[in-house]
Amino acid sequence: MPDCKVSAQNLSDWLNTAQGRYVLSREQDFFDRSVSDIFGFNALQLGWCEHDFLRASRMTLRTCAGDESGAAVRLCADELPLASESIDLLVLPHVLEFAAQPHQILREVERVLISEGSVLISGFNPYSLWGARRIFGAKNGYPWAGEFIALQRLKDWLALLGFVVVSGGYSVHAPPFNLSSALARCKFMDAAGERWHTVSGGVYFLHAIKRVPGMRLIQPQWNKKRLRRFVPATPKLNKTHKAKEGISIN
Image 1 (cartoon, helix red, strand yellow):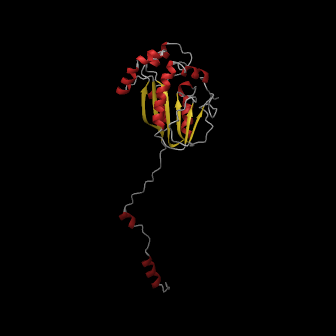
Image 2 (cartoon, rainbow, N blue to C red):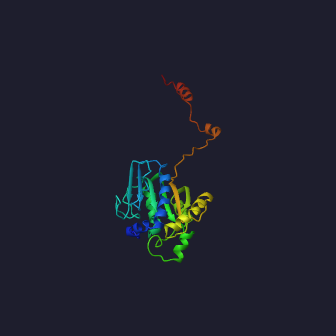
Image 3 (tube, one colour):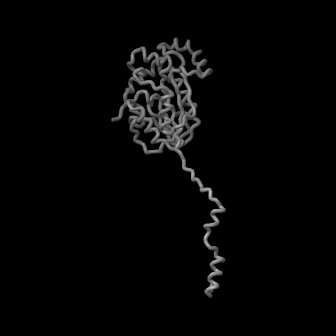
């Protein structure tokens, strides 16, 4: 059965808080930079359809799908009603943490992506202040009700499906404060984290490409000296033999 665990109402409410706006601004910057350099024809965003993470894409067809209002296509991500190898770019903003079967979602992503197609994923980092808040605080509402997935674990899942990670990084280095003023005072943490590439950011980003192994024909290395022993009789020898038997060869 399809699973769409987190309601759109919870997400919409959280994105209107200081925390939500802070995370959204960081994610929008990442997706804007990333999608502008990926080329193709068909791009699909799964979830967060109130916010267009494909707005900087140059692809002809850009669609947002999900189990929420504002989605052009209503669906759940673990059963995509799409043809195999039909999508050039897939964007997954925090989809895996809030699904009962994240592996199945990735299998669907691999199925619908073309060879050399790209997937952009954002997720909450369990090894961060945001991860600590989830462990020691209440697990009610968005995003604390989700199952945060470690970046290395996600990379292993993608590798098993034939994906190659080409880039990634961390953002949202400030603590998960509820007040805008408190988050503003922590801007220096974002600057330091981006400068020193620390792995303690509350959100990570990943760009992976689907790779399909090709076939290479290996030509046999014939030994020319041995090969001459198996060469059939030449036409000249055939003609000589027939002439001796008195058979015309003209």
